[in-house]
Image (tube, rainbow, N blue to C red; front, side, top):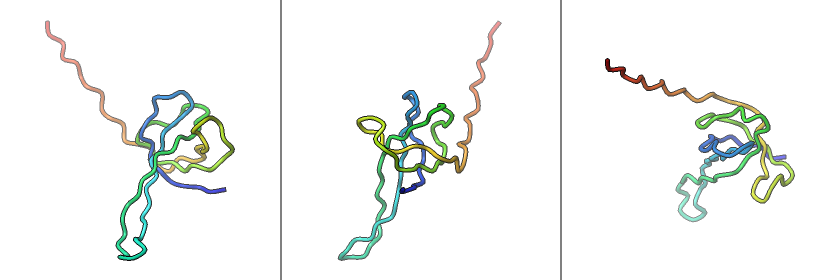
Length: 90
């Protein structure tokens, strides 16, 4: 089974994450390398991964119309944004 690394770009769906996978491809004639990106929907059973996390996804049987991957490991947790402080006026 194939395994790929990517970054979660959306966590708005229940038990589903959108993972952005980027790879370098070499042009067959000019041999210049360029970046190709794909957005894949991946299964997250416990809703534990958040947007910005770097994860490993693995190919699996079709789980829905567009979902063919599942998240198997966390590589790096995203930096959390500091909470905005609300100013209290008296």
